[in-house]
Amino acid sequence: MKLILRGHHLLCLQGFQGYGYSDNFIKNMNYINNLRKSKNTIISITNKADDICKCCPNLKNNLCENEKQNAKITKMDNEIISKLDTSKKYDAQELFNKITTIFNSKESVKYICGSCGWHEKCLFYKKLK
Image (tube, rainbow, N blue to C red):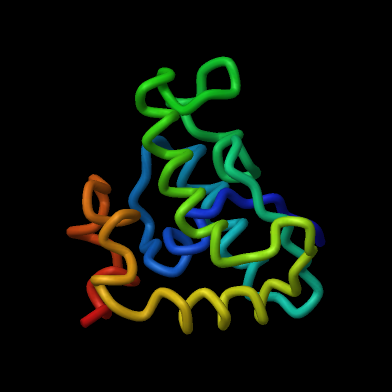
């Protein structure tokens, strides 16, 4: 299976525990979270709307909510993408192992997760020191 994921979703998926913007969004997030754990999943990375965003009720005209919010989200994506090769297609398990090695402290994600509305519930963020 092939997935296209935004940079910040590489962190979000690891902290996901069933919360979301709508039932459809949660169902899709669960589906993608399961796919990313399978051996045959390949991931391409982007800073635009991805396979998770397509079920988000905040996606309007292929932007997250509005231009200002979208710029904030894109900045989060770019922070993660700057540490990866976006021209590469990644094996999902290898990519997520790499991500947890790079982003392994609250300091390493402060510009990404610091202003996120979900960080209080996020299992990925909670486990960081």
